[in-house]
Amino acid sequence: YMKRRKCWSRYPPGPVSLPFIGTILQIDYHNPHVSFTQLSKKYGNIYSLQNFWTNVVVLNGFKAVKEALVNKSEDFADRPFFPAYRHLGYGEYNQGLVMAQYGQVWKEQRRFTLCILRDFGMGKKSLAQLVTEEAGYLCSVFSSNEGQSFDPHYLINNAVSNVICFLTFGTRFDYEDQKFQSLLHLLEQSMQEEAGLLPQVLNSLPFLTHIPGIMPKVFRHQKEFMDYIAEIVNAHKETWYPSSKQNITEAFLEEIEKKKDENSCFNYQNLTLMIGDLFAAGTETTTTTLRWGLLYMILYPDVQSKVQEEIDAVIGRNRSVSLEDQENMPYTRAVIHEIQRFGDIVPAGIPHKTYRDTEVEGFFIPKGTTIMTNLSSVLKDEAMWENPHRFWPEHFLDANGQFVKREAFIPFSAGRRICLGEQLAKMELFLFFTSLLQHFTFHIAEDHPKPREDGCFAFTLVPHPYYIKAVSR
Ligand code: HEM
Image (cartoon, rainbow, N blue to C red; front, side):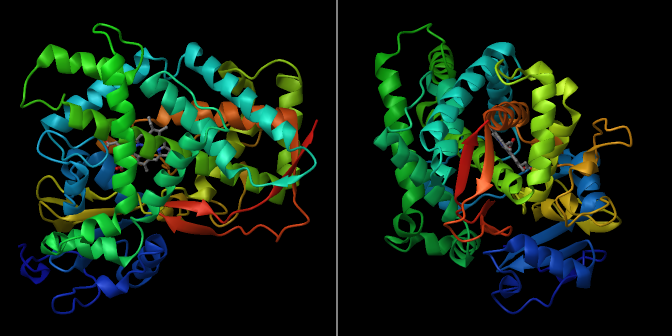
């Protein structure tokens, strides 16, 4: 195992590391970003922890995170290997995308997936139309709940997932489809399995993963989720006729046929992992952002009315929303950006690993160190934002009410591992959010407890369940 940290000069400082367990008790793994920020008050923006034998460095605040992810992008582009993934089918040539080691396999998968997403219309009109259509279905089901209090969570989740379903399988699922609903529940439960201390312990002490029965128990839902995805992928494999390239699965199948190489990342197991990754990375995050969005609209009704005024002026009540409208809607854009900033959806980022020896702000960080990027501390950096701890859309507006970009706005992270779906996510957020507010005004459901503004950590930071009332405009 790795050297203990005392051996390096200029290694970042950190809390005292106890024998065997290291600093594991310093972090509340149900709220890691909060612990990270608290520790930065004592040890500075760059400090070290130790998970058993694994060296971890935490980067806080815009300056440190930018230096690492943007200026030294490749040095920080690797991912730690979690032995827990082995039981989901990870191996040398099948690592999916999100947790793939930095190298040829990742590069090839990332390039392929980006190309294919662009071919199928990421950022294009055709896909925008599809999202707008889905937003239409969502509005109709909201209409059928009109006047009653309801929890919009699973309806939004289904609508958002349908976009990924369309891209990966060429189909959408009806909101009443019980089987699909159960897949969405499984996905949510598998995210929750990542939170807490136990997964940390298992990932740091690989020998524990050999205890019979422990992996299926702790990561039960992740396995079920992957089995389910494998089932859908297999069904496609059976009915696919070569050279048809209607969706990502078919494009991948064609690549497998073309290569016919055992030592290639284009294999069936990796297809399943890749599709699983697109679901996991692409649906929960976007759903959660929209849930925060509706929550802020009922908590800040003045902001809601101003968005609606802009919608009425630019789009009107009847025409469908289109992507080009964004140009003329600085306030709505600012609100969506502020939802992402203040909602802080992936607060602790996804773990990175150093690809070679490197430094940040003069601190030495050796190759193979696990790096946590505290994205929350950037989105709420007191040196970068006027009102970091308030929902304030004016962060993204200049004195003339025009939209302005902010450099500390990195909800999708930055550098080589920046979110692959950023463009797709932005398109979905604008089209869903604007369509909903074009058709409805949302209110607090008086017959339910007042919604809470704090979140619940399960890899993503999600709102506590809340009820709303939708009134047609
Ligand atoms: C990675 C955020 C939507 C696919 C990430 C990362 C973040 C993130 C913070 C980690 C980057 C890093 O390692 O530093 C978000 C947010 C979204 C969103 C906030 C929605 C509002 C999507 C969508 C897709 C997607 C719709 C699907 C196409 C991915 C993939 C990665 C990733 C594949 C891994 C990239 C890699 O390791 O090379 N995302 N994401 N994301 N995201 Fe997203």
